[in-house]
Amino acid sequence: MTRAKPAATAIIGALTSAILVGTTGCAGQADTPAPATTAPSSSTVTTTMRIEKPDKLLGTWTESVDRGFHDRAEQDMGTFKKLLSAEPTSAMGTAYVQAKEVYSPERGLHIPGDDQRVILISAVSGTITDPTAALHETFAGLPKVTDMAPIKPGPLGGVAGCGTAPAKTGIPVDICVWSDHQTLGMVTFVGFAKTDDPQGVFGQIRAELEQPAR
Image (cartoon, rainbow, N blue to C red; front, side):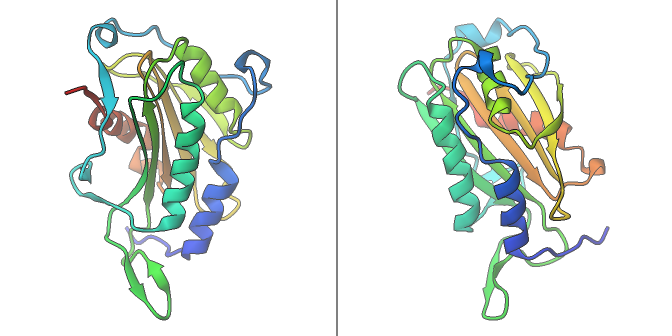
C-alpha cells in the first residue's frame, strides 16, 4: 500500500490541533463525557507496576529523533503527573516511527519511504486514587477528540477508551487512553488507516509499556 508523504509540519499541525491535553479542573465538572468503563482487574492490585520505555516498540518501531514529536508527548506526560496522588514513580513521553528519520538539506529531518505513521506515547506511574475520574479528565482535556468509546483494557485491568480527532490536515489521528490504580497513559496514532487497527495495536503497546517494577 502506498502512503502519502505529508510534510513534517503537517504532521506536527495534526498533533497540535488534536492531542495537547489541557487542564480542565475537576473531572466531575467537565463538559466532555468519558467513555464507559470496565471494572479494574484484581491483578493490578498485588503487583507494583511502572512504565518502561522499549528500545523497539512492537518489535520494529524505533524511537523518533524529531524534537517536535517529543515536545508534544512530554507536555501531555507533564499534565498526567498532575493527576497522580503523589510523586510519579516513572514517566515517559516519546514517539516512535517505523522507518528511521533522515536529514537532507532539501527536506530537513523527515521520514523516508512510504510509511509516514507516527506513534506518540505519554504515560506515568504512581498512585491514581480514581482511575475512572483520571480517564474522564484526560478525555475532557481533549475537546477536539470525538467518537469516544470504551474498549477492553486487557489483562492489565483498569479502564480504557479510544477516540478520533478531525483530520483537517488530511492526516488521521486516533487516540487511546488507559488508567488503572498505578498507571495512566495515552497512545496517539498519527496517519494510521482503519485497516491498521489502532485499537488492537494499542493493547499490544500497553502490554509493552506497563511492566512490574524491578
